[in-house]
Image (cartoon, rainbow, N blue to C red; front, side, top):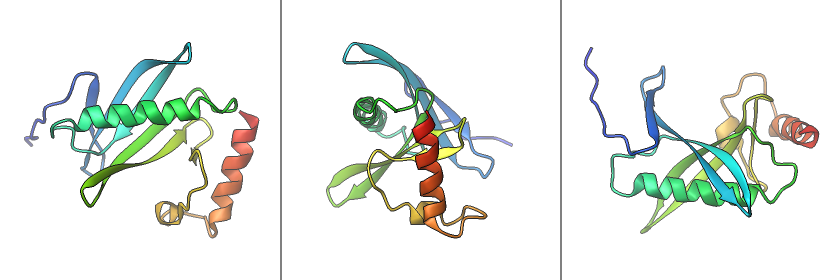
Length: 139
């Protein structure tokens, strides 16, 4: 089987999800207020388009800089970013993933109903919210 090879911007790695879609991962060290921090970013945005990788990287740095203001923000988390076209503007959607605790979280209140609707065994959104709050309180 032949796969179409896409150009990958420096610092990014491309992977194929088992269901067939491409996604990209980026890892770097960034300095926030004198503290170095590893950041891990995942996106399905098409990085082959001009300036998309730069936009994702800038959004990631912004999200992590806000997150680092919280003393309880865990160290080993990934940031998942997506770009959304809203008229003539592009905005970013995000969530953080704490793999060790198997938890998704956001920095502010967020209605994640549409994201979590396919999670097995969850009958109410509060099940996920309470789990995330409990885990983050322990970190």
